[in-house]
Amino acid sequence: MNLRQGETNRSHRNGKSQAFSGPQAISQLTHRSQRFQTLPPPLGQPPYHYDLAKVIDLEHNLSALTFHVVGDTCGVKDSSRQFHVAKAMKQDLTPESGQPVPKFFYHLGDVVYFNGEHDQYYEQFYEPYDHYTPPILAIPGNHDGDPDENNPSLQGWIAYFMTAEPHVDPESQESPRVTLSLPNVYWTLITPLATIIGMYTNVPEHGSVDSVQQQWLTNEFATAASEKALLLALHHPVYSFDRFHSGSPNMADILQQAINDSKRIPNLVLTGHVHNYQRINRVIGGGEPVPFLVAGTGGYHNLHQLAVDKGTNTTPAHPVHKSHPAAKHGKKKAGGGAVPPVVTDADTQAALQYGDDKNWGYVTLTIDKEHIHGSYTSVDKNGDAIKDADSFTTSASHRTLTTGPVSL
Image 1 (cartoon, rainbow, N blue to C red):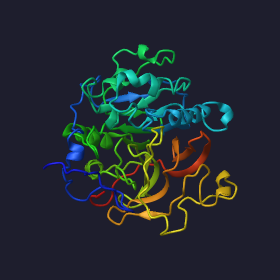
Image 2 (tube, one colour):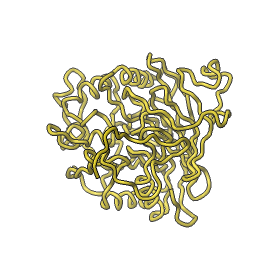
Image 3 (spheres, rainbow, N blue to C red):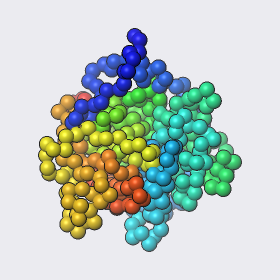
Image 4 (cartoon, rainbow, N blue to C red):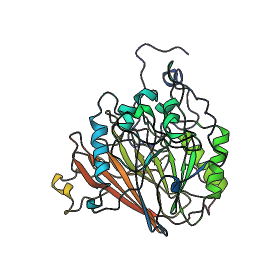
């Protein structure tokens, strides 16, 4: 197959949460460069568990755990957006904020653009988070793993997140931060109140994992503690109502296999890759919907437009209360992020509850024994932040598949 002159990626259709149905057509637009990359050897032993107590002091009988979540933070080309988001996150670290202080930052991948270069870590990672005192944990994104002639796959990511001996990387310059010793590029974070399984979905568009990681994922679902909430983090989204990437049937297949084989349903799914914020609900096996978050708003300068027809329904998915600071903007959140109507994809049954393709921002999660509460802070191009631009609460209780096999 030859490339045709003037050929470009197709825009995704309104109201659709996945890029394609059935077998994916091979396109040279993506497959010429975005090839599956061999994984580096793990630092630890299976099942690649990492205890949060290794990096922070945890109080006895912890009643709630709060942490930040976002991906695609890279400040390449225009760093102002990343610095604005980082500043808002740092402000959350003071008890005077009136909210629980986040214990760590879980990064959803694409730490450094465009090829995860180690020599870009100061500008795109160390400096923006110079006074962000909690540890920063992460899964790699496709740009972290995409090699070029001078940068092997994941070289920069490994140099900070997966070092045998914790140390201060000279690349951090005047913004020193002690490196981590995560056990693998895919790994599970063990906390007192939640198990967070982090996948590495590699470089190809729509993601890809080998059979070893698939088997590992299913085992992690099957053996995760029943008394804790189960969260899944992966870079490529299962569902996304956007015009640029869209959601990945590949990731849907991987997740549905893990659910069907283990009979365990995650309480929350966290993804990045798409440069906007979306909260999508999907009922799995009956009962309460599972929230699927797309949070690729950490600082990359270019945002991705939502693929929804905002004129089909005038009812906001997340109504603005009169007392909310956004109420003065009518049916828009402060900062310009439109509240879209509820949009349900008839093919996947994924339902977009809220989306913001005008602003950057981040998610704050608080988990206790009964609930997971999420709050999205919207940050506009001038650095003005609005707390609770979107919020949700879902159950933290153990969820099992009691019906027949599910299809996502």
